[in-house]
Image 1 (cartoon, one colour):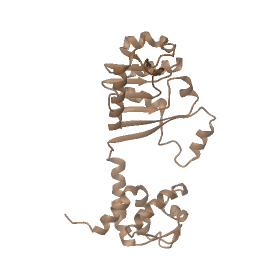
Image 2: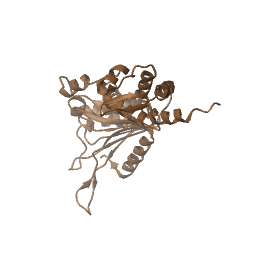
Image 3: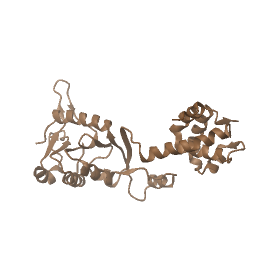
Image 4: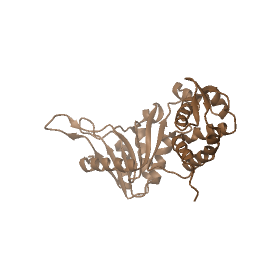
Length: 285
């Protein structure tokens, strides 16, 4: 096997972590499109990226400068340092980008999950006017059923707040989870009573074999009680939603809610925490 030029390898190592942008830069540099010293804004235009990506382009230029591919002329102006090296790097960086998009998977996969406020929402309108809009964001209302359907062994919902709207959603999620172990972790009122909305779905939850648990523990030695504010939906030990969305009307119909969908080792760690909670909690009477 032919050994690659160390100079090319070193430059590849510097630029590969930013291959989405650096591949375009090197392709344009190798083609002579960046021959004259240019400002960042002009470079954005020449490589076909929006001005909003100027910071990403600058990071790639700085990385390329360490390998001699690009040279910083002034604070805002850059030029190509080695056209031949850039042309050699372009197909390698294209391949790295293709691999990341189509083959590679991180041990921990994390996606951002969003519930938009109802229209007309100023923040939702502003988000959609931004370059990427919301296309890379998962919708909470679509994600939670997908998590439930993905479960094969156990399915857990942990929520401190539950009303009639949330109760219907909770019941629907448990109905979609075709598993043998189902857990609903709630917290009783300060008076020790279950959330009133639980009564509406309790018979059906019992039919499905859902264990309803109360995690509000007395602390006689220290006063007060031990409870939780976390919101989690967990499938097996493999995938989980963790975020701000409660199981009530305000979270699903009015508020901006933000969370993360995680798969892999992070979800396994979340599952361990919930296992400790389940072993500590008591049945919701």
